[in-house]
Image (cartoon, rainbow, N blue to C red):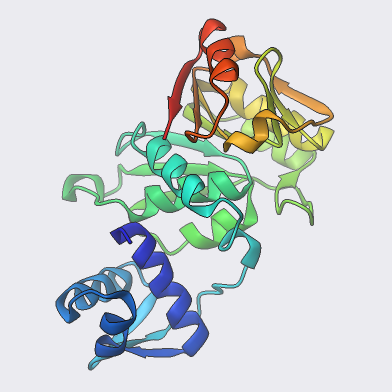
Length: 261
C-alpha cells in the first residue's frame, strides 16, 4: 500500500473508531510506528485528525459525505488516474473540477501532495468546483484556495447545476478543467447522463486553457445522453491500462494526448 492509499485508509479507521493508537495502526498496515506517527502528524496539520498522546481522534469533519465517493468501484485505477491528473497541475494553477468518483480522486491527490513552502501563502493552488463532496473534503486544506459555485444540488452526483452555477463559472478563467464523464466516445468525445450537468461541464471546459478528461476504462463502453465536448476541445485523456487499444488509438488520432496508468 502506497502512502496515498494508506492515508485514506487511516482516515477511514479514525472515522470508524473515533480514536486510534499508533501501535495498533502499525500492526494493521504493516508499517513502522514511526511511519504511522508521520502520517498522523500530516493529517493533524491538514486539520483532518487531532493528535493525542500515542494516537489520534477524529475531528468534526464529516468523513461520510458521501460514502460512495470513498469506496467507489475500480478504486485503485481511479487513484492512479487521480494522481496522474494532479501531476499536470502546478502549485499556483487555477483548476476547475466537476463531480464524480474519479475527479474526487484528482482532488484528493491535489490535497495530499507535498506543497512547497513558497506555495502556501496568499498565492496558492485554486480549485473551483461545483461538487459538494469535493468542496467538503477541500475546505480544511490550508494550502488550497477553494471556490464553490452556487446552484441546485443533484442527488445522483452531488453536483451543483442551474443558472447560479453557470453564472459563477462564466466569470472565471481556468488554467485546467478536469472533467469526469459518464461516457467517453472515441469518435464524439465526452458525455454525461444529465443535460444540466453536461451544460455546466461544457462551460467549465470552455473557460479553461487546458481540458483534461479523467475516465476509467469502463467509460469507453458506456453510453450517455448529453454531449459535453468533442475531441477537438480536449487536450488530455487519462484512463487506466484496461482501456481497449483501438479506442485509445482513435482518441490519439483525434489530436488528444492519451495517458493510460
